[in-house]
Image (cartoon, rainbow, N blue to C red):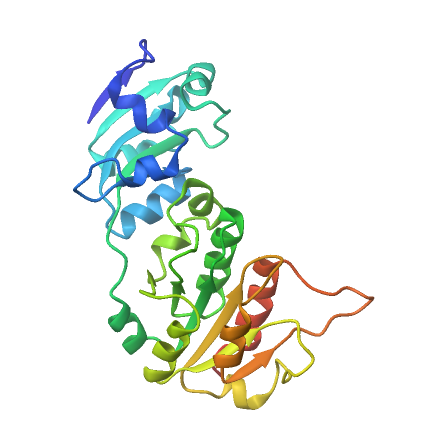
Length: 269
Protein backbone atom coordinates (compact mmCIF):
# COMPACT_ATOMS: atom_id res chain seq x y z
CA UNK A 1 0.00 0.00 0.00
CA UNK A 2 1.05 3.62 -0.49
CA UNK A 3 -0.25 6.27 1.95
CA UNK A 4 -0.33 9.65 0.21
CA UNK A 5 -1.15 12.83 2.11
CA UNK A 6 -3.15 15.16 -0.13
CA UNK A 7 -1.62 18.59 -0.57
CA UNK A 8 -2.74 19.18 -4.15
CA UNK A 9 -6.47 18.95 -4.89
CA UNK A 10 -5.79 18.86 -8.63
CA UNK A 11 -4.19 15.41 -8.54
CA UNK A 12 -5.72 13.43 -11.43
CA UNK A 13 -6.01 10.39 -9.14
CA UNK A 14 -8.59 12.31 -7.08
CA UNK A 15 -10.86 12.92 -10.07
CA UNK A 16 -13.20 9.95 -9.39
CA UNK A 17 -13.94 11.32 -5.91
CA UNK A 18 -14.64 14.79 -7.28
CA UNK A 19 -16.96 13.52 -10.00
CA UNK A 20 -20.68 13.92 -9.28
CA UNK A 21 -21.78 12.66 -12.71
CA UNK A 22 -22.63 8.98 -12.24
CA UNK A 23 -22.83 8.35 -15.98
CA UNK A 24 -19.32 9.72 -16.35
CA UNK A 25 -18.07 7.21 -13.78
CA UNK A 26 -19.95 4.45 -15.62
CA UNK A 27 -18.05 5.32 -18.83
CA UNK A 28 -14.75 6.14 -17.07
CA UNK A 29 -12.64 3.42 -18.70
CA UNK A 30 -14.33 2.99 -22.05
CA UNK A 31 -14.14 0.71 -23.89
CA UNK A 32 -13.38 -1.20 -20.67
CA UNK A 33 -15.91 -1.54 -17.85
CA UNK A 34 -16.48 1.57 -15.72
CA UNK A 35 -16.03 2.41 -12.05
CA UNK A 36 -18.12 3.38 -9.03
CA UNK A 37 -17.57 4.81 -5.56
CA UNK A 38 -18.25 2.74 -2.44
CA UNK A 39 -18.77 4.72 0.75
CA UNK A 40 -18.36 3.64 4.40
CA UNK A 41 -16.33 0.78 5.88
CA UNK A 42 -19.22 -1.71 5.93
CA UNK A 43 -20.11 -1.10 2.28
CA UNK A 44 -16.49 -1.34 1.15
CA UNK A 45 -15.96 -4.58 3.06
CA UNK A 46 -19.02 -6.11 1.41
CA UNK A 47 -17.79 -5.04 -2.02
CA UNK A 48 -14.39 -6.60 -1.35
CA UNK A 49 -16.05 -9.79 -0.10
CA UNK A 50 -17.94 -9.95 -3.40
CA UNK A 51 -14.72 -9.71 -5.39
CA UNK A 52 -14.87 -6.10 -6.55
CA UNK A 53 -11.42 -4.74 -7.35
CA UNK A 54 -10.33 -1.51 -5.63
CA UNK A 55 -8.55 1.26 -7.51
CA UNK A 56 -7.75 3.60 -4.62
CA UNK A 57 -9.03 4.83 -1.28
CA UNK A 58 -9.79 8.31 0.04
CA UNK A 59 -9.60 8.23 3.81
CA UNK A 60 -9.67 10.66 6.69
CA UNK A 61 -6.34 10.61 8.52
CA UNK A 62 -7.65 9.32 11.83
CA UNK A 63 -9.22 6.28 10.15
CA UNK A 64 -6.02 5.05 8.48
CA UNK A 65 -4.99 3.27 11.67
CA UNK A 66 -8.57 3.13 12.97
CA UNK A 67 -11.77 1.73 11.51
CA UNK A 68 -10.40 1.59 7.95
CA UNK A 69 -7.13 -0.16 8.76
CA UNK A 70 -8.36 -3.65 7.83
CA UNK A 71 -9.76 -2.31 4.55
CA UNK A 72 -6.45 -0.67 3.70
CA UNK A 73 -4.65 -3.96 4.38
CA UNK A 74 -7.07 -5.85 2.13
CA UNK A 75 -7.06 -3.38 -0.75
CA UNK A 76 -3.31 -3.02 -1.25
CA UNK A 77 -4.08 0.14 -3.24
CA UNK A 78 -3.01 3.77 -3.02
CA UNK A 79 -4.59 5.55 -0.05
CA UNK A 80 -5.12 9.31 -0.33
CA UNK A 81 -5.56 10.87 3.08
CA UNK A 82 -6.20 14.27 4.63
CA UNK A 83 -8.15 15.95 7.42
CA UNK A 84 -11.93 16.14 7.14
CA UNK A 85 -12.01 19.70 5.80
CA UNK A 86 -9.68 18.83 2.93
CA UNK A 87 -11.77 15.76 2.13
CA UNK A 88 -14.85 17.98 2.08
CA UNK A 89 -13.12 20.25 -0.43
CA UNK A 90 -12.40 17.22 -2.61
CA UNK A 91 -15.80 15.53 -2.48
CA UNK A 92 -18.05 18.54 -1.96
CA UNK A 93 -19.66 17.19 1.20
CA UNK A 94 -18.80 16.20 4.77
CA UNK A 95 -17.74 12.55 4.87
CA UNK A 96 -19.50 11.10 7.90
CA UNK A 97 -18.00 7.60 7.51
CA UNK A 98 -14.46 8.74 6.78
CA UNK A 99 -13.56 6.51 3.82
CA UNK A 100 -14.41 6.15 0.12
CA UNK A 101 -13.16 3.55 -2.32
CA UNK A 102 -13.06 3.82 -6.10
CA UNK A 103 -13.68 0.35 -7.54
CA UNK A 104 -14.01 -1.31 -10.91
CA UNK A 105 -17.48 -2.49 -11.86
CA UNK A 106 -18.34 -6.08 -12.59
CA UNK A 107 -20.67 -7.19 -15.33
CA UNK A 108 -24.22 -7.87 -14.09
CA UNK A 109 -25.20 -11.48 -13.53
CA UNK A 110 -26.28 -13.53 -16.55
CA UNK A 111 -30.06 -13.28 -16.88
CA UNK A 112 -30.60 -16.90 -17.90
CA UNK A 113 -28.54 -18.08 -14.94
CA UNK A 114 -30.45 -15.85 -12.53
CA UNK A 115 -33.82 -17.09 -13.80
CA UNK A 116 -32.69 -20.72 -13.67
CA UNK A 117 -31.32 -20.59 -10.13
CA UNK A 118 -33.82 -18.33 -8.34
CA UNK A 119 -37.20 -19.15 -6.82
CA UNK A 120 -38.06 -15.65 -5.62
CA UNK A 121 -37.13 -12.58 -7.66
CA UNK A 122 -37.83 -8.90 -7.13
CA UNK A 123 -38.52 -7.08 -10.39
CA UNK A 124 -38.09 -3.30 -10.64
CA UNK A 125 -39.92 -1.60 -13.51
CA UNK A 126 -38.57 1.84 -14.46
CA UNK A 127 -37.73 2.86 -10.87
CA UNK A 128 -35.44 5.87 -11.15
CA UNK A 129 -35.14 7.10 -7.56
CA UNK A 130 -31.73 5.99 -6.31
CA UNK A 131 -32.79 5.90 -2.67
CA UNK A 132 -35.70 3.61 -3.48
CA UNK A 133 -33.51 1.31 -5.57
CA UNK A 134 -31.01 0.96 -2.71
CA UNK A 135 -33.72 0.40 -0.10
CA UNK A 136 -35.42 -2.27 -2.24
CA UNK A 137 -32.12 -4.12 -2.62
CA UNK A 138 -31.64 -4.07 1.14
CA UNK A 139 -35.14 -5.46 1.72
CA UNK A 140 -34.71 -8.07 -1.01
CA UNK A 141 -31.47 -9.34 0.53
CA UNK A 142 -32.89 -9.36 4.04
CA UNK A 143 -36.31 -10.85 3.33
CA UNK A 144 -35.70 -13.88 1.18
CA UNK A 145 -35.46 -12.74 -2.42
CA UNK A 146 -32.93 -14.70 -4.47
CA UNK A 147 -32.24 -11.95 -7.03
CA UNK A 148 -33.25 -8.52 -8.28
CA UNK A 149 -33.95 -7.90 -11.97
CA UNK A 150 -34.36 -4.42 -13.41
CA UNK A 151 -35.90 -3.08 -16.61
CA UNK A 152 -33.53 -1.07 -18.84
CA UNK A 153 -34.98 2.28 -17.68
CA UNK A 154 -34.23 1.71 -13.98
CA UNK A 155 -31.58 3.65 -12.13
CA UNK A 156 -28.21 1.89 -11.86
CA UNK A 157 -27.83 -0.05 -8.58
CA UNK A 158 -24.15 0.95 -8.42
CA UNK A 159 -24.84 4.67 -8.33
CA UNK A 160 -23.37 6.04 -5.11
CA UNK A 161 -26.62 6.80 -3.28
CA UNK A 162 -28.12 3.41 -4.12
CA UNK A 163 -25.02 1.58 -2.92
CA UNK A 164 -24.98 3.58 0.31
CA UNK A 165 -28.70 3.17 1.05
CA UNK A 166 -28.51 -0.55 0.31
CA UNK A 167 -25.72 -0.83 2.92
CA UNK A 168 -23.75 -2.82 0.37
CA UNK A 169 -26.39 -5.49 -0.19
CA UNK A 170 -26.12 -4.72 -3.94
CA UNK A 171 -22.93 -6.78 -3.66
CA UNK A 172 -24.60 -9.66 -1.81
CA UNK A 173 -27.63 -10.51 -3.97
CA UNK A 174 -27.46 -11.35 -7.68
CA UNK A 175 -28.91 -8.69 -9.97
CA UNK A 176 -29.16 -8.02 -13.66
CA UNK A 177 -31.21 -6.29 -16.35
CA UNK A 178 -33.89 -7.49 -18.71
CA UNK A 179 -33.05 -6.87 -22.37
CA UNK A 180 -36.54 -5.48 -22.92
CA UNK A 181 -39.21 -3.43 -21.21
CA UNK A 182 -42.88 -3.99 -20.46
CA UNK A 183 -44.72 -6.19 -21.17
CA UNK A 184 -42.17 -8.41 -22.94
CA UNK A 185 -40.12 -9.05 -19.80
CA UNK A 186 -43.19 -10.57 -18.11
CA UNK A 187 -43.30 -13.20 -20.85
CA UNK A 188 -39.61 -13.95 -20.23
CA UNK A 189 -40.41 -14.57 -16.57
CA UNK A 190 -43.34 -16.83 -17.42
CA UNK A 191 -41.24 -18.79 -19.92
CA UNK A 192 -38.78 -19.47 -17.08
CA UNK A 193 -41.54 -20.88 -14.88
CA UNK A 194 -42.33 -17.84 -12.72
CA UNK A 195 -45.76 -16.97 -11.44
CA UNK A 196 -45.86 -13.21 -11.92
CA UNK A 197 -47.41 -10.87 -9.36
CA UNK A 198 -48.00 -7.20 -10.10
CA UNK A 199 -48.04 -4.93 -7.04
CA UNK A 200 -50.68 -2.32 -7.96
CA UNK A 201 -53.42 -0.15 -6.46
CA UNK A 202 -56.43 -1.79 -8.06
CA UNK A 203 -59.66 -3.30 -6.82
CA UNK A 204 -59.44 -6.50 -8.86
CA UNK A 205 -56.68 -7.97 -6.70
CA UNK A 206 -56.12 -11.08 -4.63
CA UNK A 207 -55.09 -10.98 -0.99
CA UNK A 208 -51.35 -10.65 -0.45
CA UNK A 209 -51.51 -13.45 2.15
CA UNK A 210 -53.31 -15.88 -0.19
CA UNK A 211 -51.69 -19.33 0.19
CA UNK A 212 -51.56 -19.84 -3.58
CA UNK A 213 -49.00 -17.04 -3.77
CA UNK A 214 -46.53 -18.01 -1.06
CA UNK A 215 -46.74 -21.66 -2.10
CA UNK A 216 -45.70 -20.99 -5.69
CA UNK A 217 -42.41 -22.71 -6.49
CA UNK A 218 -41.16 -19.74 -8.52
CA UNK A 219 -42.56 -16.26 -7.90
CA UNK A 220 -41.70 -12.85 -9.36
CA UNK A 221 -42.79 -9.77 -7.36
CA UNK A 222 -43.05 -6.83 -9.75
CA UNK A 223 -42.81 -3.25 -8.45
CA UNK A 224 -43.39 -0.01 -10.34
CA UNK A 225 -42.10 3.51 -10.14
CA UNK A 226 -43.37 6.12 -7.67
CA UNK A 227 -46.47 7.98 -8.78
CA UNK A 228 -47.45 6.15 -11.95
CA UNK A 229 -46.77 2.63 -10.69
CA UNK A 230 -46.67 -0.29 -13.09
CA UNK A 231 -47.62 0.12 -16.71
CA UNK A 232 -51.17 -1.09 -17.52
CA UNK A 233 -49.77 -3.57 -20.03
CA UNK A 234 -47.54 -5.05 -17.33
CA UNK A 235 -50.48 -5.55 -14.98
CA UNK A 236 -52.50 -7.09 -17.78
CA UNK A 237 -49.69 -9.53 -18.62
CA UNK A 238 -49.16 -10.73 -15.03
CA UNK A 239 -50.75 -13.83 -13.53
CA UNK A 240 -52.10 -11.93 -10.52
CA UNK A 241 -52.40 -8.44 -9.10
CA UNK A 242 -51.88 -7.79 -5.41
CA UNK A 243 -52.20 -4.72 -3.22
CA UNK A 244 -51.30 -4.20 0.42
CA UNK A 245 -54.40 -3.49 2.57
CA UNK A 246 -54.35 0.02 4.04
CA UNK A 247 -55.95 1.58 7.11
CA UNK A 248 -56.84 5.08 8.33
CA UNK A 249 -57.43 6.36 4.82
CA UNK A 250 -53.82 5.87 3.70
CA UNK A 251 -53.89 5.04 0.00
CA UNK A 252 -50.38 3.67 -0.51
CA UNK A 253 -46.86 3.14 0.79
CA UNK A 254 -43.59 4.33 -0.66
CA UNK A 255 -42.40 1.67 -3.12
CA UNK A 256 -39.41 0.78 -0.93
CA UNK A 257 -41.65 0.28 2.12
CA UNK A 258 -44.16 -1.67 0.04
CA UNK A 259 -41.38 -3.92 -1.22
CA UNK A 260 -40.43 -4.95 2.32
CA UNK A 261 -44.03 -5.88 3.15
CA UNK A 262 -44.43 -7.80 -0.12
CA UNK A 263 -41.12 -9.67 0.14
CA UNK A 264 -41.90 -10.80 3.68
CA UNK A 265 -45.44 -11.88 2.92
CA UNK A 266 -44.62 -13.58 -0.39
CA UNK A 267 -41.48 -15.40 0.71
CA UNK A 268 -41.49 -19.14 0.12
CA UNK A 269 -42.93 -21.13 3.01
